[in-house]
Image (cartoon, one colour):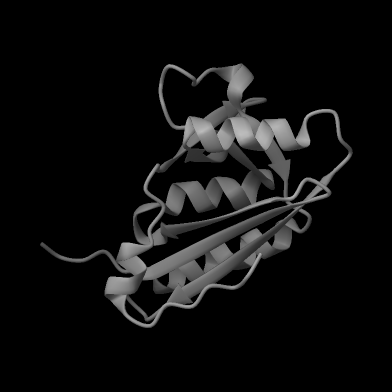
Amino acid sequence: MPKRNFNTLEEFKANLHKEGATLVEFSGGKVPCILVSPKKYEELLGKVYGKKMSADTLLDIFYDGQDVFVDVNIKFAGADFDGNFLLYANDMIEFFDALAESGLIALAPSETTFTNSQNVFMIQLPKKDAAERALAIIKANARKKTK
């Protein structure tokens, strides 16, 4: 899971995760969910199904006092599968609040024909406090742009 570096705002915007993200209901709470293409989702399931594995999750935060981007890196040990999902945190405070609260992150296929409770892959964060620190950084640095 290589660390990615971006030098300009245009590079950040060009590398944003295109499938999107949402919140899903789980056990009476909200869990942040990153949407991926159905093909990538099926590839993930094929590599992890029936295997003992762990997921290492890293939140790489980039901010300049106005714009906050979070590169969510997930690597599945023993499954030869990883993903980088660059998100614009200014518009996703509730997403990161749910991440800090639940200590869970989910992956699901992006197409609505695939979306149901059976097609959500949950990952427990190894360190919930990292999500809490990330949320504090996001709240302190994300500024809504005036129109």
